[in-house]
Figure 1: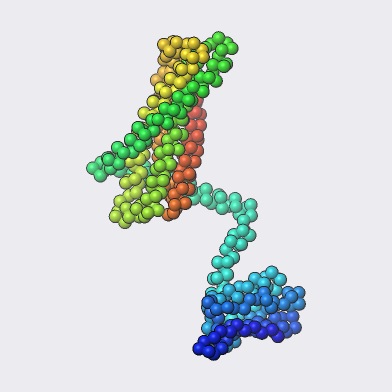
Figure 2: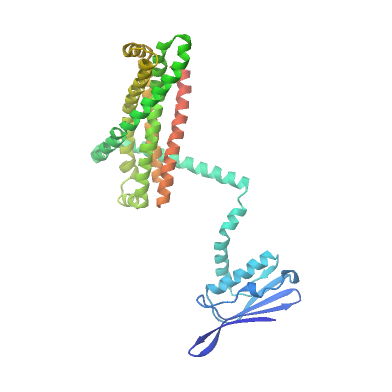
Length: 384
């Protein structure tokens, strides 16, 4: 028999705070707990007197003359259960009070949460969770798109409640404030396309056709695409950060309590602003991109600007321009939807806002690439 006492002093008298009695009978270990257990006092440690696990088959725990106890006793019981599990022993808790068993189960589940999740983290389990998460995300996207569509349908009848000042501010943020970065990127893209084309065209003496290559590439593809990617990283991220921060500060909850739709109040003005400014920015990006190609043609191939401009006009028609503007409008709507949706789905924390911002940019760029591929197939099928 092994007996352990942890004592304390109260008014000069010694009282028993915690007592553990361990008796080995045959191949069973009987553990009796008694006394007063308090979290602020010292308690016995099971590892100090645990026997060799090979000498026993089971551990039976019971209480006797237990005056008071708190979580310190539960932690001690968890030590015994963990030791029993390590040595493949049966831990019998049937003689403990029902209340103590319930609290012990709850506390043990907290400690075992991470381990149980890791145990179930198999390949099939991970694939299933990923599939379920993808389906839930798809449902969330459809729900948000439907709400935005209904908000657009309600707009003509609610023009007196439309936030015109907010819309004008978003027009400025999406359009005017984006001009410097759009100018730089578009000019460099036109410059790069012209340099790459000049290397090949020089071999055939077809220098003048550099205007055709740069003009068509910029107007049909690179202008809308580069403007969209720039706004996805700039404006889409801004939408997600702003709305996500409002969600973290419970401002969106306050709007819903007041009966104001967050989609009508926050999303619709941003969608309209981005949908309007994207075609205009694309036209500007087209001009700057063509200017970049003209600089290379004049400096490398010695083509006069007038000849370059005439050849560009002959190669680009209204159909090419309209295809680029259709793409730009679609890209703008996709960027606005991605930014606002991720902002509304943001977690209520600073980390959640950061994740929502990142997710908005990734989602917008992914949707832009997918939409551009669909447009390419569609325009090819229509012969445009």
